[in-house]
Image 1 (cartoon, rainbow, N blue to C red):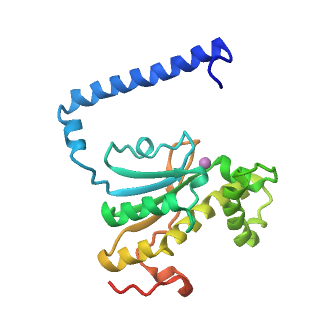
Image 2 (image 1 turned 135 degrees about the vertical axis):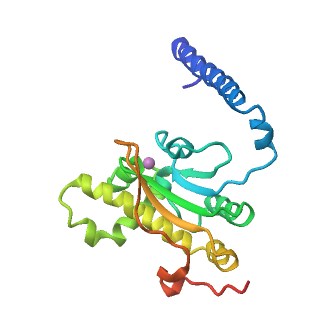
Length: 225
Ligand code: CO
Protein backbone atom coordinates (compact mmCIF):
# COMPACT_ATOMS: atom_id res chain seq x y z
CA UNK A 1 0.00 0.00 0.00
CA UNK A 2 1.43 3.38 -0.97
CA UNK A 3 1.86 5.96 1.73
CA UNK A 4 -0.99 8.46 1.92
CA UNK A 5 -3.36 6.38 -0.21
CA UNK A 6 -5.75 5.85 2.63
CA UNK A 7 -5.41 7.40 6.06
CA UNK A 8 -6.94 4.39 7.73
CA UNK A 9 -4.52 1.82 6.28
CA UNK A 10 -1.59 4.14 6.93
CA UNK A 11 -2.59 4.28 10.55
CA UNK A 12 -2.85 0.50 10.69
CA UNK A 13 0.56 0.09 9.07
CA UNK A 14 2.01 2.53 11.54
CA UNK A 15 0.47 0.62 14.40
CA UNK A 16 1.99 -2.65 13.18
CA UNK A 17 5.49 -1.21 12.93
CA UNK A 18 5.13 0.38 16.37
CA UNK A 19 4.05 -2.97 17.78
CA UNK A 20 7.07 -4.67 16.21
CA UNK A 21 9.48 -2.18 17.77
CA UNK A 22 7.72 -2.38 21.14
CA UNK A 23 7.79 -6.18 20.88
CA UNK A 24 11.54 -6.01 20.30
CA UNK A 25 12.10 -3.92 23.40
CA UNK A 26 9.97 -6.26 25.51
CA UNK A 27 11.92 -9.25 24.15
CA UNK A 28 15.27 -7.60 25.00
CA UNK A 29 14.07 -7.02 28.56
CA UNK A 30 12.90 -10.63 28.87
CA UNK A 31 16.22 -11.98 27.60
CA UNK A 32 18.24 -9.76 29.92
CA UNK A 33 16.10 -10.70 32.91
CA UNK A 34 16.97 -14.37 32.26
CA UNK A 35 20.64 -13.80 31.40
CA UNK A 36 22.24 -10.39 31.79
CA UNK A 37 25.11 -11.34 29.45
CA UNK A 38 22.82 -12.78 26.74
CA UNK A 39 23.66 -10.18 24.10
CA UNK A 40 27.32 -9.89 25.12
CA UNK A 41 27.75 -13.60 24.40
CA UNK A 42 25.91 -13.48 21.06
CA UNK A 43 27.87 -10.42 19.97
CA UNK A 44 31.11 -12.42 20.29
CA UNK A 45 30.21 -14.70 17.39
CA UNK A 46 27.95 -17.46 16.17
CA UNK A 47 28.43 -21.22 16.41
CA UNK A 48 25.16 -22.64 15.05
CA UNK A 49 24.97 -26.44 15.01
CA UNK A 50 22.58 -26.58 12.09
CA UNK A 51 21.65 -25.05 8.77
CA UNK A 52 17.92 -24.88 8.11
CA UNK A 53 16.60 -24.62 4.57
CA UNK A 54 12.88 -24.03 4.83
CA UNK A 55 9.86 -22.38 3.28
CA UNK A 56 9.42 -18.60 3.60
CA UNK A 57 5.87 -19.27 4.91
CA UNK A 58 5.23 -17.10 7.99
CA UNK A 59 3.88 -20.11 9.89
CA UNK A 60 7.11 -22.11 9.75
CA UNK A 61 9.74 -20.11 11.68
CA UNK A 62 12.77 -22.37 12.26
CA UNK A 63 13.67 -21.27 15.79
CA UNK A 64 10.10 -21.15 17.08
CA UNK A 65 9.02 -24.62 15.91
CA UNK A 66 12.25 -26.28 17.06
CA UNK A 67 12.27 -24.53 20.42
CA UNK A 68 15.73 -23.11 19.75
CA UNK A 69 17.29 -19.71 20.37
CA UNK A 70 19.27 -17.03 18.58
CA UNK A 71 22.64 -18.47 17.59
CA UNK A 72 21.48 -22.09 17.28
CA UNK A 73 20.43 -22.30 13.63
CA UNK A 74 21.73 -20.68 10.46
CA UNK A 75 18.68 -20.13 8.26
CA UNK A 76 17.89 -19.94 4.56
CA UNK A 77 14.26 -19.69 3.46
CA UNK A 78 12.60 -19.35 0.09
CA UNK A 79 9.26 -20.13 -1.50
CA UNK A 80 8.62 -23.87 -1.03
CA UNK A 81 12.12 -24.65 0.33
CA UNK A 82 13.50 -25.30 -3.13
CA UNK A 83 17.13 -26.55 -3.31
CA UNK A 84 18.63 -26.22 -6.77
CA UNK A 85 22.23 -26.18 -7.92
CA UNK A 86 22.11 -22.80 -9.69
CA UNK A 87 20.70 -20.73 -6.81
CA UNK A 88 23.62 -18.47 -5.92
CA UNK A 89 21.89 -17.28 -2.74
CA UNK A 90 21.30 -20.79 -1.36
CA UNK A 91 24.76 -22.01 -2.41
CA UNK A 92 26.44 -19.05 -0.71
CA UNK A 93 24.54 -19.76 2.50
CA UNK A 94 25.40 -23.46 2.20
CA UNK A 95 29.09 -22.86 1.60
CA UNK A 96 29.37 -20.44 4.52
CA UNK A 97 27.43 -22.73 6.85
CA UNK A 98 29.37 -25.86 5.89
CA UNK A 99 32.90 -24.53 5.38
CA UNK A 100 33.14 -21.62 7.81
CA UNK A 101 30.56 -22.32 10.53
CA UNK A 102 31.05 -26.09 10.13
CA UNK A 103 27.47 -26.97 10.96
CA UNK A 104 26.85 -30.59 11.93
CA UNK A 105 23.40 -30.82 10.36
CA UNK A 106 21.71 -29.47 7.25
CA UNK A 107 17.95 -29.76 7.38
CA UNK A 108 15.64 -29.29 4.40
CA UNK A 109 12.19 -28.72 5.85
CA UNK A 110 8.98 -28.58 3.85
CA UNK A 111 5.46 -28.25 5.17
CA UNK A 112 2.04 -29.63 4.31
CA UNK A 113 -0.30 -26.93 3.06
CA UNK A 114 2.56 -25.21 1.21
CA UNK A 115 1.17 -22.54 -1.10
CA UNK A 116 4.19 -22.84 -3.39
CA UNK A 117 3.69 -26.57 -3.90
CA UNK A 118 -0.07 -26.07 -4.41
CA UNK A 119 0.63 -23.38 -7.02
CA UNK A 120 3.15 -25.66 -8.76
CA UNK A 121 0.38 -28.28 -9.08
CA UNK A 122 -1.87 -25.70 -10.75
CA UNK A 123 -1.82 -24.14 -14.17
CA UNK A 124 -2.21 -20.46 -13.39
CA UNK A 125 0.29 -18.21 -15.14
CA UNK A 126 2.00 -16.39 -12.28
CA UNK A 127 4.68 -14.55 -14.26
CA UNK A 128 8.14 -14.58 -12.70
CA UNK A 129 7.08 -17.07 -10.02
CA UNK A 130 6.50 -19.62 -12.83
CA UNK A 131 10.27 -19.96 -13.11
CA UNK A 132 10.70 -20.79 -9.44
CA UNK A 133 7.74 -23.17 -9.33
CA UNK A 134 9.05 -24.96 -12.44
CA UNK A 135 11.56 -26.73 -10.19
CA UNK A 136 8.65 -28.27 -8.27
CA UNK A 137 6.88 -29.18 -11.51
CA UNK A 138 10.11 -31.03 -12.42
CA UNK A 139 9.89 -32.95 -9.12
CA UNK A 140 6.32 -33.87 -10.11
CA UNK A 141 7.48 -35.06 -13.55
CA UNK A 142 10.26 -37.18 -12.02
CA UNK A 143 7.72 -38.84 -9.71
CA UNK A 144 4.64 -38.79 -11.97
CA UNK A 145 4.21 -42.59 -11.94
CA UNK A 146 3.77 -42.57 -8.16
CA UNK A 147 1.82 -39.31 -7.90
CA UNK A 148 -0.69 -40.21 -10.59
CA UNK A 149 -1.67 -43.35 -8.65
CA UNK A 150 -3.36 -41.17 -6.02
CA UNK A 151 -6.95 -40.18 -6.67
CA UNK A 152 -7.21 -37.69 -3.79
CA UNK A 153 -5.71 -34.32 -4.88
CA UNK A 154 -4.82 -33.58 -1.23
CA UNK A 155 -2.75 -36.77 -1.10
CA UNK A 156 -0.96 -35.73 -4.31
CA UNK A 157 -0.17 -32.34 -2.80
CA UNK A 158 1.08 -33.77 0.49
CA UNK A 159 3.26 -36.34 -1.28
CA UNK A 160 4.69 -33.67 -3.59
CA UNK A 161 5.62 -31.63 -0.49
CA UNK A 162 7.57 -34.69 0.74
CA UNK A 163 9.14 -35.46 -2.64
CA UNK A 164 10.25 -31.84 -3.01
CA UNK A 165 12.10 -32.16 0.31
CA UNK A 166 13.66 -35.49 -0.70
CA UNK A 167 14.77 -33.98 -4.02
CA UNK A 168 16.24 -31.03 -2.11
CA UNK A 169 18.29 -33.32 0.15
CA UNK A 170 19.63 -35.19 -2.89
CA UNK A 171 20.44 -31.89 -4.60
CA UNK A 172 22.48 -30.87 -1.54
CA UNK A 173 24.40 -34.15 -1.73
CA UNK A 174 25.17 -33.43 -5.39
CA UNK A 175 27.05 -30.21 -4.54
CA UNK A 176 30.84 -30.21 -4.33
CA UNK A 177 30.42 -28.18 -1.11
CA UNK A 178 28.77 -31.12 0.68
CA UNK A 179 30.88 -33.82 -0.97
CA UNK A 180 34.12 -32.03 -0.02
CA UNK A 181 32.93 -31.60 3.58
CA UNK A 182 32.11 -35.31 3.79
CA UNK A 183 35.68 -36.16 2.77
CA UNK A 184 37.32 -33.53 4.97
CA UNK A 185 35.40 -33.86 8.20
CA UNK A 186 32.81 -36.61 7.93
CA UNK A 187 29.90 -34.19 8.16
CA UNK A 188 27.39 -32.63 7.96
CA UNK A 189 24.47 -35.00 8.20
CA UNK A 190 21.67 -34.11 5.77
CA UNK A 191 18.04 -34.45 6.86
CA UNK A 192 14.65 -34.16 5.16
CA UNK A 193 11.78 -33.10 7.40
CA UNK A 194 8.19 -32.04 6.92
CA UNK A 195 6.18 -29.81 9.23
CA UNK A 196 2.47 -30.25 9.75
CA UNK A 197 0.69 -26.92 10.22
CA UNK A 198 -2.34 -28.68 11.70
CA UNK A 199 -0.55 -30.14 14.74
CA UNK A 200 2.78 -28.30 14.85
CA UNK A 201 4.81 -31.50 14.61
CA UNK A 202 7.93 -32.13 12.53
CA UNK A 203 8.28 -35.50 10.83
CA UNK A 204 11.56 -37.05 9.67
CA UNK A 205 11.18 -38.33 6.09
CA UNK A 206 14.06 -40.77 6.57
CA UNK A 207 16.31 -39.40 3.84
CA UNK A 208 19.32 -38.85 6.08
CA UNK A 209 22.57 -38.71 4.09
CA UNK A 210 26.12 -38.55 5.44
CA UNK A 211 28.02 -39.84 2.40
CA UNK A 212 27.55 -40.30 -1.34
CA UNK A 213 26.50 -43.93 -0.90
CA UNK A 214 22.94 -43.35 -2.07
CA UNK A 215 23.86 -40.88 -4.79
CA UNK A 216 23.79 -41.89 -8.46
CA UNK A 217 27.40 -42.35 -9.65
CA UNK A 218 27.11 -39.63 -12.29
CA UNK A 219 26.84 -36.98 -9.54
CA UNK A 220 29.92 -38.00 -7.57
CA UNK A 221 32.99 -35.77 -7.79
CA UNK A 222 36.62 -36.73 -7.34
CA UNK A 223 37.51 -34.99 -4.10
CA UNK A 224 41.27 -34.78 -3.49
CA UNK A 225 41.47 -33.19 -0.08
CO1 CO B 1 5.41 -23.18 1.90
